[in-house]
Image 1: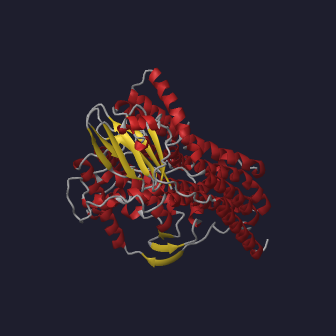
Image 2 (image 1 turned 180 degrees about the horizontal axis):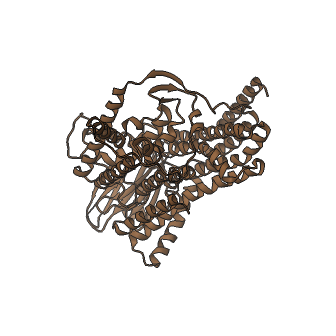
Image 3 (image 1 turned 90 degrees about the vertical axis):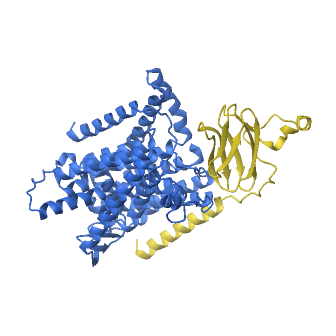
Length: 139
Length: 471
């Protein structure tokens, strides 16, 4: 194989790989409206209970108690909503976003913020260091 | 069994014993505030396809005469001796300061400069810098600088020094393998691997071991073979187009110095350890490992181990298994080559071990790129407040890590590009060696089918570790 042929083959390979890359890359789907946040666990909440008890609105998000690590999946730009309850005096810490909230014992605290940073972040109780949630922000 | 593996086994046993005695069970990487999103399926598919296409094109289109072997680097300028002295002083001062900071500063890993310096700047940053600028660790190496200083003073004073012992041939690079595995264990398995005072103490202990080695076998002999970090960074420096040879700054074809990597006992283990440690760091965050680990953990607890010890034993086994998998992959490719080569497996494995260096670099870069970019920013506030005592030396103590400088998509592309380019580089290096070993180029190409299996295997494993398939 001559040098020219070799260069041609390499150029063709590069072109094929580039074309395959462009073709296989998905179109960015339009961002859903901020209200439709996707959650791995859907809450058993109906509009009737929501109106009956204003504290449990459907979009206040999952309740994190630390019984297990809950995954919260959102896309960048959406609003993250969840609630936290701890039996003891604690502090909520969302890594990366560095959100800190005091948690009085036994009280449910609602948290909401815009997901501006992509990646996977721990949601933990700061004092005990226990992880209660995992926030996954997709691009 | 020769003596070197016995020594390594003893080192591992001691490490296990220390682990069993230490209490806390926390294993999380305290430094990382953000983890990477797994590579999406489409990109995984594209990269796997690209790896195959590149491999076959390479077999058809690669050169017919060696291009990397036996090349003389071109000398640029002479490096004056005082630069060596200045670098040595800087290295020793930095080392002394970090030990001081670790022992006396705040003990929360993110408040003290030591963990970030050790695991980000030193362990990862120096690999990347070495692969571009050559062996920069050598002049700054604090252990070597101190030893050279002492040796200079002793010679000046006219004292007689007992001659260095001959470095045992069979020891080869095994001390460096032991050091590397021990460091990997500290980073990935040890419960307090982020603890500043522990890191400082271990750094002092490590320095002491180096000085004993240097005093026994000679400064340069020990540094080139026994000091885990000199050996580790020196491997990647062979990829770089720049280096210092015989007190001269030289330029050379990238990758060409890999061909001069002399095989010594332990070299294959060294490369397998380097790849295995990084692979296990990726795997330990993935689903596959997290399905196995609780079983292992429970098994050890049933056998009577405490909570913390069981967890560490499980992770130790994971680390050792990752290194063993890397070694098995390489052995498989060597066996594949034997069919055309009519050479012993040992000889072939020595001849081609340097082609694993680009793979090891690709693993480090793909796995730690985001750590470098994000945790690297922590240096801005850590240099202003290295001890975590509230000082603000450079008025940057209140800066924070900006997690938006690089998007998740960019991280994916960089990771995939690193693995694919590393794959191509490894193929080129192995092909070049095959041309020398097998002379007839047809036979050289055929012999490479075996190595191709290794490279494709390593690259696919690397991709899988980063992908949603393992999330």
